[in-house]
Image 1 (cartoon, protein in one colour):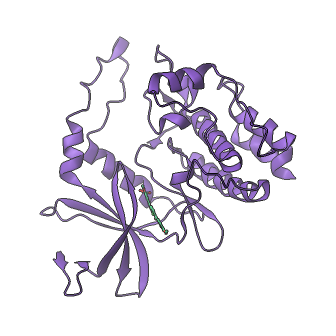
Image 2 (cartoon, rainbow, N blue to C red):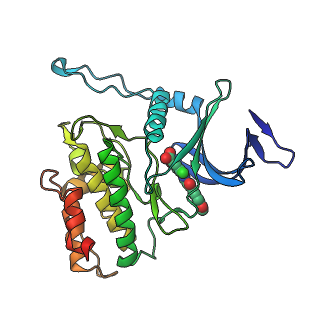
Amino acid sequence: SVVDGADGYVQLNQYKLKNEIGKGSYGIVKLAYNEQDDVHYAMKILSKTRLKKKAGFFRRPPPSRDGKAVARPLAPMDRVYREIAILKKLDHPNVVRLVEVLDDPNEDNLYMAFELVEKGEVLEVPTDKPLSEQQAWSYLRDIILGSEYLHYQKIIHRDIKPSNLLLGDDGHLKIADFGVSNEFTGTDITLTNTAGTPAFMAPETLKEEKENFSGKATDIWAIGVTLYCFVIGRCPFEDDFPLSLHKKIMNDPVKFPEKPVVSEKLKDLILKMLDKNPETRITLPEVKEHPWVTR
Ligand SMILES: COc1ccc(C(=O)/C=C\Nc2cc(OC)c(C(=O)O)cc2Cl)cc1
């Protein structure tokens, strides 16, 4: 039950909700103090009415082509319950941990209590203070281990980017926000819909004719864009207009500025992760063997 505490903080069961620490298309995240265990958590707050309103924009389900079952976009509430089901089965040091869900049917808000990752987003992009290669190397290892675990659990994240990578006091990263992730069976998923954040979308997901593409390869692309952001401070492809951004992602070569200086080995890795052809793009196991990673 949600009550206004005498001290001006909202009390939600054993949690005292404090200041806002995160905000996005999903809703907001507040610092939450658990009086029972004297521990702070990150409380993600979703409004059911807002989600249902967004349902209105879901385009009519496409006619199923040649009788093949086409994945229907889920109603937002179903998407949230799917996100929760995915999160509940995940347990890895480089993935955020969902502790508890508070979903009172009479309440408009749905609350998701996560283990607090103390320092928040690893890097705000754009920045004029990009990371050193040493720092980027440490964070990439965490991203690789977390992504390897997710792919092993047959989950494609689909929105890997700096703002979804949270930094703990121990200097390690945790992957967050499974709001657009997909589960698959078999060895990989063939996707057709675009999802995630435009500047991090792989070229094969932006093509006009919606051919099928590999889910794992799209996560590798997003990790490549993220790695570029870490050491350069901005994204490799930028444009204020979505369609011109799509054109750049699909056609422009990756360019490195004079400054900051990036080692040849790191440039080589980034170029292999940002290979526009998903068939020849470097895979996660190959990234682990790359000279810049094993250095
Ligand atoms: C300055 O100190 C700070 C410490 C922690 C934070 C923080 O946690 C922010 C967002 N958190 C999250 C967001 C999520 O999705 C969007 C998910 C998820 O749905 O997986 C989980 C978490 Cl935890 C911010 C600032």
